[in-house]
Each structure stands twice: as C-alpha cells, then as structure tokens.
Length: 147
Image 1: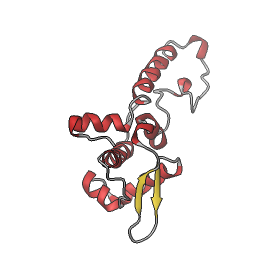
Image 2: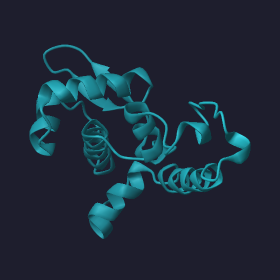
Image 3: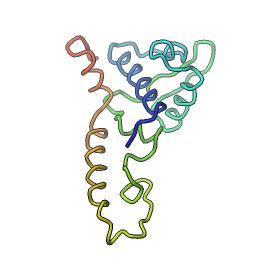
Image 4: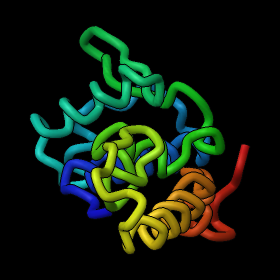
C-alpha cells in the first residue's frame, strides 16, 4: 500500500476537523480554513471533502457560512475507512483484496499470495483500529479535553 497525496490530504483534513471537534469546536469549518491550516490546495481539498461527504464521513453545509463538519464522532471514524474512500483497497496486490478482489490465473501455484495476504491483514489491523480520536490524543496528549 502506498498512500497518495490525495489520501494524505484527506487524513490531514479529517484529523483537523476531529481535533477541533474533540476540543469542543464542533461548528462548521469553511474549506479555506482547512486549506490554510493544513496547507492543502483548496481546489484539491474540495474534491477530497466531497468524496468523504458522499460516504458519510463528513456533512456539508451550504450558504455564505457553509462548510464541513464531521458526520459522526471521531471515535467512530477510522483511518482505514478514509484511506479506502480516497485510495481504494489496502491490499498490496489485487488477488488478496477483500473489497476489490482480482482473480489470479496462477493462484494454486503462486508463492507470494499468502505473504501478501498477511501484509494486507497487518495493514488492515492497524488502520482499521486507529480512530481519529486516538490520533488526536497522540497529537495533543493530556492537553486534549474530551467532551
């Protein structure tokens, strides 16, 4: 698995919204604020946030004071979920992917499939257990006053 720039920016944006949420700042955040704070090109960020909205990670609000908020608490959003939305499956090869399996012509005599399945499982175990609340706690430690 290689995290794309788009995937990295998605993680940064959701982390920014999550840490604000956990610091009691649950109000709508405009795209330009996220863009400026996280140093993400605004047009690129719009596309990322729209993708995350479509799957229910974020909620958008229209109007002059419109922007984005989390659709659910950071404790209920995992890093693996966000990466899959933006970059697709976590599996290093298609024949071991659970969500986008690609049949293998030499499956019965392939020496790498079982190793790549272990790699997929290891990556998945870390990213699907790590929530954005936990990431914020790692960033802010004892300074994070959870509400």
